[in-house]
Image (cartoon, rainbow, N blue to C red):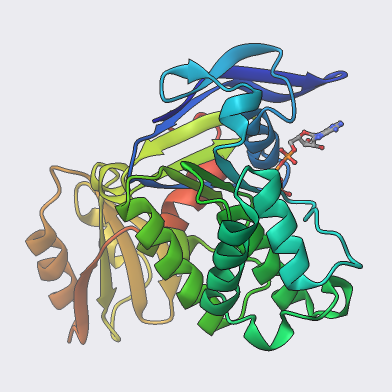
Length: 300
Ligand SMILES: Nc1ncnc2c1ncn2[C@@H]1O[C@H](COP(=O)(O)OP(=O)(O)OP(=O)(O)O)[C@@H](O)[C@H]1O
């Protein structure tokens, strides 16, 4: 279990993190999302121990992260720390050996991840000659090559083509299935929603929501999409507990309070004429994200 426990960090006058807490259990895929500058990279760097927190603690398997624990972490930094003039295979072997693998095991692991991440034809190329997406694949291989007990990946999906996204999604699921906690940040919310067991949303250095997508979206009100081509604007405002979120021509998106009656909405819509669409829409992570990063005082 990775535990981020009330971690705070200032850079000069700027409070980058203010009491950030969350956990990633063994076997759990935890998605970390937030606007640019919200504090994701800072949290991950502190989790790895490359940056010190001002207060709070990071624990892995119940113990504070130390130099020894750090060797068990597969980390993909935002700044992508590869050796540009080293060949892909040599680089991965070297990194695996740095983490304590024997030369034979390091070769085996490097070849395995080269094949898995589709880098076979590039294995003898200098990293600097690879496309950005392929450099990203090497970076991922570097995070995985020593068979880490914890994965902390800063935007691992950025710049990957759709096939590589599928491969990486499979790899992360597979690692989690072996009991490894996996934490990664991403701005691709549909992907995070699809892939992650739990999600944390950070805003201005504070966690504003942590939980499963279901937990986070369940209590937030039901959404209805109603298309009533003959209706005048404002037709839905008379229904108790219904709030208009969006209007697109004849289509209205409504949020219903828990006590509101969806059939009353349907009756009000039918009273205006024909209804060509009436459907419930689950709140997505994107809806939740927009609300929690844009709304002052949004739920914590
Ligand atoms: N070394 C530093 N010195 C000064 N300020 C910093 C430093 N590192 C981060 N910050 C500030 O801390 C805040 C959090 O930055 P951080 O990089 O953690 O955000 P992020 O959520 O990873 O953003 P992005 O999605 O853009 O990568 C920002 O305001 C950033 O400018």
